[in-house]
Length: 492
Ligand code: ATP
Ligand code: MG
Image 1 (cartoon, rainbow, N blue to C red):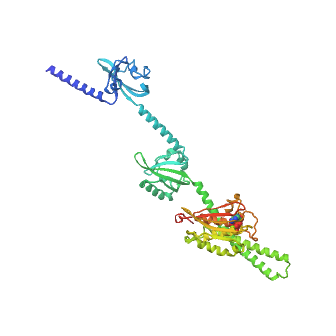
Image 2 (cartoon, rainbow, N blue to C red):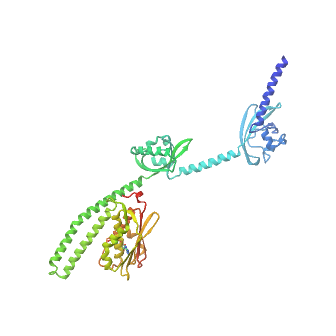
Image 3 (cartoon, helix red, strand yellow):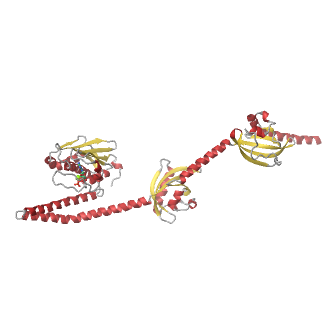
């Protein structure tokens, strides 16, 4: 009975040992056992496969190190207390690898020994290092960005960069977990909420919009925002990009006000000028009519000059009014055959064309365009009048009105073989009151320098552009385009 009891205990031990051994053999980590001199007593299968059976009996440092020297932090020769464990990370192992090693003091074959568990962490370390590097790179990028960057999850700020904090004038720590509505102007909260909802639903291109924000001390700022849906810590969130456009907005507002004021001023001035001009014209005409025969010739000339000047003033005021109206008067866009417009302009100028013996050619391919025909009339008229006015003393004066179809644009041109324009004026002539001082042959015609400014505004209101190609003395060609996608271009 006594014997069988012992048998049972021994059996249990053997089974437990077998069990341990199986684990040690198959565990996906390296395991070895060293005696207190550092000799290898045992290798598990994994290590044996790499080092070979004859590693047994050699010292640990002869096997694991290229240099044959001991590792830094080697617990030998002191050894390790039985049952105690210590671990260490060692690089410069054979082949430049890095191992994580744990040492446990134990008894092995009745002698003090050290059990080691060895893991090769070379790749993991390299990956970690890479990740750290790239994280550092991105965080540097984000922190040095000129735009504010943030992440909004569940309507709370979960990340914000320095610039974001600067824009809203918050200390960065205070921003984390703040409810996003606090950063938005009360009147724009509905808009922002709608944009967020849309962004979270659809996953396409980034969404861009402008809204007012509130700084920490309640100051109103204008923000342009660009949102994108992302996954953050496994759940949907919004990655946003913001720029402070307060100054730009204020400048625009200022400019708009100034423009309004200027327009009102032009309107009032031109209106108030009309009456005295009419009076001057009327009275000078009456004086001329009444006293022409009795007055001295010199005085008649003076009176005529007064009358002519008053007329010029009248034209000037009318031009000024026309210019201030463009973009203000409700425009009327419709499909109009541009040939009709051109014909109308030409018939109003027929007289002058004939008087100056100008040959006029009109292309046959003028298209129907979607435009404000009264304005386009002004464009052709101004260009044609200029072409006549600046013909100089060309032997065979010719003007051509032509058209080339573009993909997105209708492109027209009016060309002449008159005096031409020095290239240094090619830009300025489109500005208000800018004229090139050239010798004008055709009568005493003076201009106010508004014609091309009007052309420029009209064309831009039609989503197009106007420019000139010319050389002094060689005639000029004025090109202008009208957008074909006008219904999509917002026009005033
Ligand atoms: P307004 O048209 O207001 O009566 P203007 O004709 O002088 O006056 P713009 O039509 O704006 O003013 O033209 C500006 C200047 O450009 C003109 O003064 C002229 O010097 C030059 N210019 C315009 N068209 C031509 C052209 N076809 N050939 C040569 N010079 C031109
Ligand atoms: Mg003109």
